[in-house]
Structures are given as structure tokens and as C-alpha cells.
Image (cartoon, rainbow, N blue to C red):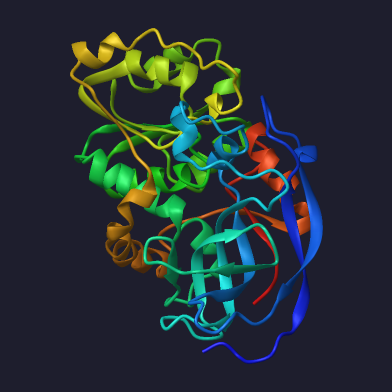
Length: 352
């Protein structure tokens, strides 16, 4: 039960200044200080948590725009001007009135971008952390939404077969670095694209990709894919959209599968890019499925059972790009849309 008495503390928060159109800027966000009661009301079922790590996720961009109920992006509820933005993070329970959480418990799930959050945990939005022999920060990435996304998208949606060819865009990011390693475990040939020589080198030396290319150095993306996949692509793990998706469609094999979890190239455009090769989906009987990991939380235990042994044995590599301090959260988040991060971008708010 919650403790009696009210004690307060300063709570710094990352606030949305105004709705965003086009590329977001650091100035679209600002830090503000408020106070938070360090006790939750009895009977509230609430938990006060101290946020330790915050996940920087590309889909946050879709929540920064002005709400439009007619937009497909409206599935991601817009942030509120003048209020803290929110996302997934790792936190520690400070004061709990919830029967499933006690003071000191660690959890990951939906929290505000702030030092302290008051949450009402639900099975579909918060998960108690039972495995603490791995870095807690992994629950923003490898063992959180990005890891579940890679697992569900590759194994459940794409149903890989040994010897198939796999292409991953944004391959060095939070999701892509895992998809490549899962593909190798499945006996596939895998190629990734990234935005710099440093990231391309990581793909080939750290994440086990058979080949990789810097899409910024390619004059023709379709030609680049033909060079890497002379017989075509069986599986495409889609993180980018736009011109990359168009080039991939031209190079897919018959009965290929595309798992689409993100299209970061489109998030900052006022008008989406047109695709020219959509008819290929019909001609080659390609299956394209968009998905969101939050609809697959029932697979989370299965995912942990699969991935934790590999993590503990050092058979999975996961690179994080950690910004120190909440005050550096805005620059870390905005940097995602300029390819500044190397690996999974997150913010360390506090040490446990």
C-alpha cells in the first residue's frame, strides 16, 4: 500500500512546445520543472516510478503533429502541447498502491519523458522486470519493443526458410541490428542498408550481415539491390519506405514477404512519396504486412525464452547509443531523424 504523508520533489519534464510540421527541431521541445508528490493516494491503484532509461523511437514523430482523425497516423495518439511527451522506458517503483507492484520493483513500459511518472499499470502497457542479470537499458531495446518487433516481424510474419535471401533497411538501428542476427541464425543470406560507412562496417563486422551498402552513396537503389541479390529478395524487413521500398518491390522474388514496421523516410514529409512498382505485389504474389509490436504482447514471454539464452551466452550483439541526462533527451530524439545515432538510441535519466 502507499505510504501515508506527502513529500514532494522536483520533476523535470520534456515538453512539446507546438505541433510539428516537417522535420522536428530541438526547439520544438523544452525542459520544464514541476513538482511531484512522492506518495500516491490510497485506493488509486497508481504507482509512482523513477524513470531510469527512456527509449528514443522514430514513431514519436507521428505523435508530434497536429491531431488529424482522418490521417492513418492517428492510430498513434498525438502528444499534447504544453504537456510532457511520452514513450517507453525503464523505471523503478518508488511508491505503489497497486497489488502487483511493490516499492523497489523494476519495470518497463509506457512512461512520461520526465524524472518521475505516476502510472496505472496494465498487462498491455507495463511489464515487471524479472531478469536483472542483463543490462537494464536492454529493456528499451533488445528486450523491449524493438526486440519484440524484430522477433515478431521476422519469425511470425516472414516465416523464414533456410537459404532464403533477406534485406533489411535502416539495418544498424534498434530493430535492424537484431533482424540481421536472427536471419543468420535461421540460415539466411542477409544484406542491410545504412546511412554511413561507420554503420555499414558495423553491419558486416558486429552484426553478421553478409553484405551491406550505404544508400547515400548509391546512384540507383534498384541497381544496388540487384548487385547484392542477383536472384532477388525473398524477405524484406521494412523500416524506411519511399524510394527504398519502391526499389525493393522491383527486386522481390515470387511469393516474397515484406514485414513493415516503420517508414522513417516518410514521417517528416508534408506529402508522402508516390510508389511506382506496386503492381509487382500482384505479379509476384508478394505478401506485405504492416504491424505494431504492441499488438503482439502475447508473444513477449516466448520472445524472452528465445532471446535471453543467446544474450547470456554473448551470441547476440546489441549496440546502444546512450545520451546522458534528461536535458539531452530532445537532441537525442531529434537526432534519430538525421541518422545521428549509432545503434539503439536511448536516454539515461538516472542510475538505479
